[in-house]
Amino acid sequence: MMVTVFSYFAWIHISPIAFLVGHPWGTFPTIPLLIVNTIVYIPLIYYTIRRWLRTMMRRKSGPAAGIDTVEPGNGVPEPGDEWGFATRPYSFKPPTKVIGPKSEIRESPIGIDTGFFVKIPDLASGEAIFDASELRSKVMKRSKVSSGGWINKRVSSRSAGSLKASETSQHGRSLKFRIPLKKASNIHLPSTIVAAVARTGIVTPGKNLVIDKSDIREKVFTARIPLTVILVIDVSMSMKGSMSQVRTLLGRIESEVRGSRDRAGIIAFKDSGAVEVQTPTSNWNKIYRGFAQLRVSGLTPLAEGLMKSLETIKRERMRRSSIEPLVIVISDFAPNVPLAQSVGPGQAMYTPVRDLVKASRMLRKANVRLAAVNVDSEQVQWVRILKRPYHDALELATMLRMRKEGHDNPMETLLAVPEFRKTFGAYLIARAGGGHAYLSRELMRVDSVLGELLKGSHEKVRLKASDLLEAETYLAH
Image 1: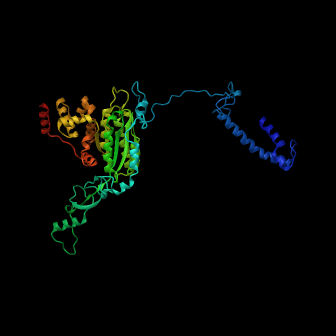
Image 2: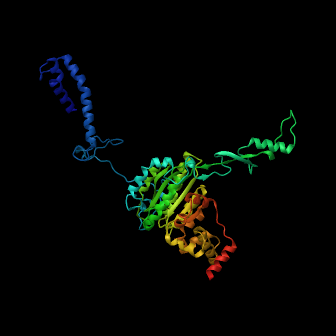
Image 3: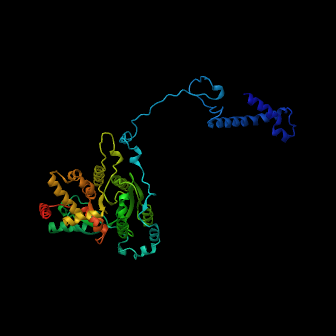
């Protein structure tokens, strides 16, 4: 208050307004001038004091720190208030533990920090899989792509996709008709009328034609529809010796997908997590930039890569419910990091293989086509020993071991036998996810990689008793 009164008397004696009207400084102003100075002074001193209080509030130290702190309730002066050191009694309130999802209140195993299981992969570390200059040169070849001269793909099929529509899917043109297997989805009127006339034998003029349920025919559509290809790529340290196979495989997929309406996305997994490098797109210039980010280092969280692909597919289905997803897992299938959600109290060991089964079954439940491509060169021994393709060879080996161990089903055998648990990761995913396992070297010999992957997503291998007997006889000799 004293400061305000003193500043007021100083203002009316040395006010710039008095100088403007010709009144001498240092003298008491006239009544009209006094009124004008007071009107100007009130808002000026108000905003000055307000600015000063805000400045004092932001100060962290000094005798006037916290000068404008207002305590709730009745203010009781404490020792030190005259110096600006007033404090409020502090009582600790422990936060509740029952907050958020269940995974947030679980404790990690002893010796491992919680952040270990939620670490985001560092894509900037490690050895690059692709040559950045080579990818940059591919980006510049737009004119050749549009003319159809660079990619080994027919120009007439560039506007179509790679997946052949099923007969019940309403895509493309109606080329034929048939008797509906269930409820007719789209009635083919000409053939329906012909069937009704053929049943009655004659059409009476002036009477309506009676169409029976047995006369109804439905349209059969045929076309090629676009795919949404999700490339789940293992960029852990164990893939360092297989980088050339990864480049070759991705090059083959590129040559068949690029130029059509198929869309491709990239998911990379290493360290202890997975990251979506590129969302599904038909712009391969963006996909090349995603390939340039792939660098090999860290551990192998394979189950996390599958879960990330499921997240991507769910998001894409929210945008367009009619997409046809195909998840291609490229790895050596040696997981060593479990899902973060599976690590909790009471578990004696980590479960990366069991998490792999759980993630694969979730993809199968979501009706996702799944293909597991193994780039491990040592896996060719199963093909050589059992004289069958990779998936069939692993299926046969599992069945033989199941009979020997006395297990009830193949999945139990895969999880119970240690050597199978370590080396049969590709077949484990294929078996649990309803897909097919491939060896990259075998896949490179086929005419169409994408066609082979789509074919395997529908075919199911069913071994007969004669196959088991033949294999047992062969191995006995």
